[in-house]
Image 1 (cartoon, rainbow, N blue to C red):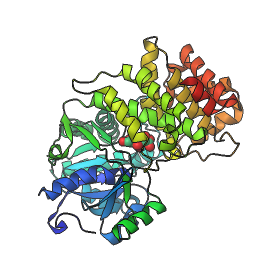
Image 2: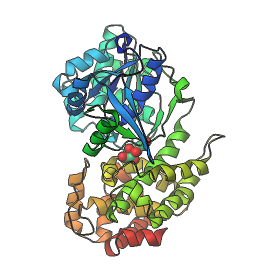
Image 3: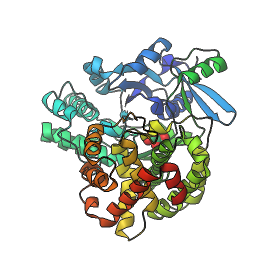
Image 4: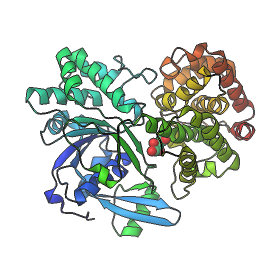
Length: 474
Ligand code: CS2
């Protein structure tokens, strides 16, 4: 495996927290493009905050790996060389802090999934009761959480008089830069109010919208890459041709010339973020829960079912698009049509169960916020309510054939407790779930239309099943 440049000339400029498949098929590719044309001071040190898997797989191949773009019969492998080094935070927290406080590092970027921010998804505020935050407050120099690492590294940089880095959040959170700023500042203030002030004055947290569909790599993919390239790559990443990155151009310590490689630098990311969260991710979650319940393994398989395709088109057109106001030149109609094509990409095996995980962290921005806005205007939420009911039905942990479903969600124990008392009673279940204020806030449980829409949809899912409910809903 050889990238398009001499890696010996490349210096680190970015520490990335969360070295998963998404980062490797997205930001690392844009950085690779910059390095290839001579911007050699932006190499990436990738860190995993939990597992050693990625480091263990990629270290023997010096951090090199393939990104394989798949669509129809087309398969295009490319070697990426921008990840220079890999760290595993729990093994050696100091090594990560040393990297983050190195003056050559000017950006700390993150893809740690929604739950990594230790915040309350309904309010966006730091959850000071989160076990990792409790830990980080008592061990500020040996943190566990991503916000804890950022605060500790900024404290070290302030003490050593090294300019602050930009914190670049690349997760699907609403107003992601603002959310991370508030979480990081709040944690810093709990430790040392002056550090909070320093962060407020010196650190940039641009908002971003990131988009590329990257299913988890399987052993079948590994075998295919070996046949295709003649190289044993322990962890290639498979993705689609489409890639989009929109960033607010506010960096406190420089940035690569990403704008020369297709990244859109804008003043205000908010409309793009909402467009993507509601049209792409909102549809994805709808497909994940209802599709899985109807027996579909992948996104492409789900939208190949005409009733599902109709439901998703209607969700976008009737319930999501009217909530969006876009700058001139953005054609939501074309964007939605393109999304349907991306979902239909059969050469990507994007599993409904992969998207279904962590719904408690995803639903607030994908489905619940648009529902709240529509209800305030007296508009119908029929399809969104069906999707939310799909999430409740899925997280009950039993599929339509009576087999158990492994629920991967930080709130899984709470779902199990609700289901064990509510049984299969749609009203009791809805009322139980509506008490989850980090998901629904405190307003929606009081909203009679919201409550009754969920009860009706859930009743249908429980009695008729997902396929019939979707056929009737679209
Ligand atoms: C998906 C996203 O797993 C999920 O929740 O909706 O990972 C989605 O594929 C990406 O946001 C696409 O950019």
